[in-house]
Length: 382
Image (cartoon, rainbow, N blue to C red; front, side, top):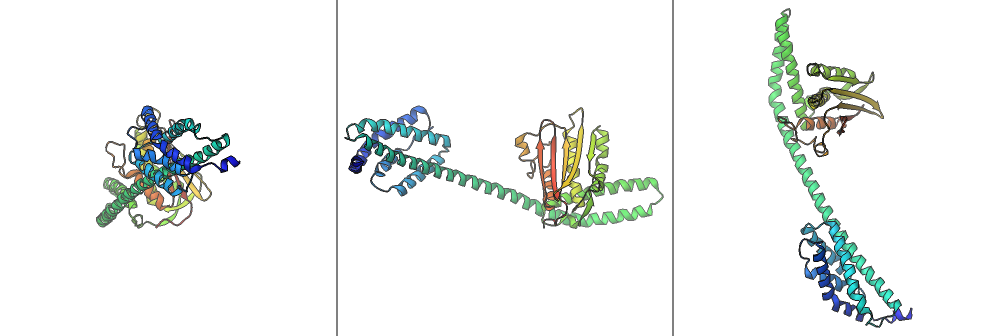
């Protein structure tokens, strides 16, 4: 195309720059009329884009275009301008630019091929400016999100660190007197053999003592120490669940709850026995609380094994847990109960993680399920 080769791009660039004030004014008017922006768009940012597009016809403005895109993106982000609005104002610019330029082309003595060539080069510069503006805006948003995630993670870990220190200190302060109490209770039990009434009282005290021991076990899960120095050993799941069921039977019977167990025979796994009991006891007590308002109260615990894992599911037919609550269930101090402390499920999560396992919750209109996945045989987390 010989006509294209002789086109004076420098002259055209100067003519576009001469139109930049008109283009900018009309663009800002369009932005204001369409209410795309809730505030005034900076004049210098607006006009600089037209100048850069004009200069791109005769020189390399790649670095300047990126710098402009970064500046305008930082300004838009500082104003919390939505991403959808950015694309909209660039669409307006393209429309305004050509509305202003096309009438002038008739006076510039350009043939059809030259106009096509000019439109292609200008279109390429426009696309580049949009690309870099969107790129930098996304980078700013992603950087902010990353900073927020790091802050949330830091605060969460800080909570766990504080809880760990409290737990370790509490265990140290309570274990010595508890050991003494346990020792004397056993001595009293031996000296009162044959006295059925006194023996009954001692059995009740020992039962409550075991409950207190389990609570300390659970709370100590927040520290980096082993769970009360408990041994990581092989445990039969049906035996463990039977011992947990004994503890909740009074509530099940007293509140008329149908309790169903589906446990495969001879299912075993390596675990901290008392720690896992604490998890299941907490989940089952929560399930009992969840079905209080139901006429037909049902709780089910199911277990299955495969691929080196044991999967436990504690299910109830209580009300559905809303998604916004579901997302925070295992956060320390988060609770929906009037007198709750918000550490029960956090304790469960920490104990399961010390087994290199996972726990999560699924809730629908029909049922709520807490699902635990544990390795059958694996060294615990240190």
